[in-house]
Structure formats: C-alpha cells, structure tokens
Image 1 (cartoon, rainbow, N blue to C red):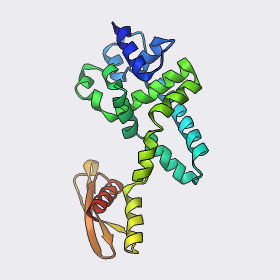
Image 2: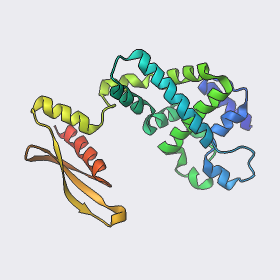
Image 3: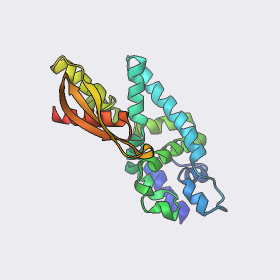
Image 4: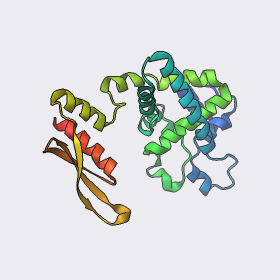
Length: 227
C-alpha cells in the first residue's frame, strides 16, 4: 500500500525512481525519526543538503545562459526563485505535503509549514539527482521552478520593498527615503521596533518588527501600498 501511494507521487513528478527508498527518504522529516527510532531509513536533511547544491547550480547555470545581467541582479533573481516561500509553493502544487512522514506533533501544522515543504522539495531534488542523474534533475527543475521566474521579473519581486520604494521615490519625487526608529518596546529577548519611513521631514507610514531591518521592510511595504 505504501509503495502504491508513492507511485502516485511518481506520476505527479513524472519520474520513475529506480530506488524507491530514495524517494521515501526525501519525504521523512526529522520529527518522524524521533518518534520511530527503529525506522530503517534516515530523515531527509542530508538529501536536502545535496538538493540545495544541485538546485543552486542548475538555477545559476540557467540565469547565466539566459540573462546578460550583472552578478548582483542575477543573485537577486536566484534568491527569489529558491527562497522558502517559492519552493513551498511548488511543493504544494506537486502535492508533496500529502506524502510527508511527520511526527504526531508536526501532523497538526507541519504539512502546511513553508519551511518543511521547502526542505522536502530540496531533498526531493537530491533524491532525483542520486537516482536519475543531473540531466533529469535539471529537466525537473526547468519544468517546475523556472516558469515562476516570468512572474518574479514582471512584478519585480526579486527586489525587496525598500529597494522598490527608493526607486519610486527617486523617480516620482526626486527624494531618497530615510528610516528612523520611533519607538522600542519589550524586554531584551523579545524587543519590538517601530520604524518610520520619511520623505524629507514627512513620515509616510511606519512598520513594526522584531529588529530594525524587519521594521524597515514592513514600513517600505506599507509605503508602497499607500503611494
């Protein structure tokens, strides 16, 4: 029954594994092994480590061959493609969340957690690479992840909100935004920062975060929505 279930995933992935245990291992979260110490397979973290490297190589090669952009911009493109949110989205599309091996504690929320889904996707790439080779892994990534790049470029989501708001402000108002801490609250281990974003002396809006950088990003995002 278990192998039959995995065969449904193989159909979804359009890949027939020679070693089914590699596919299975890619789906095993550490928490499952903690509850099943005698389980014959290990968790997916080593495969994730490998898959991360394979993914970065293939995406980097694609960007180098297809974009005549400076190194910094190519790095931003790659970061947007392989970030946790992006990989988790592909995992959901492929229904990987339905096949994960999780502890009872993780079962409640683990199948929807971006970090677990993204890690499983990278582990899956590691498993594909070991079982099928680099060419098949590259084809899989091109089919499932590369198409997301078009939307990233159209929306300029490879840029963080601060960069976009600075471009808009300089273009529309000839002003570079500045950020100032308005307030700090909470104990040292759980501080909250309230940061305002200003155009000259006028505060456009503010953001609250666990550190100054997070508060600045939230302020910039709100400012973009406002302006």
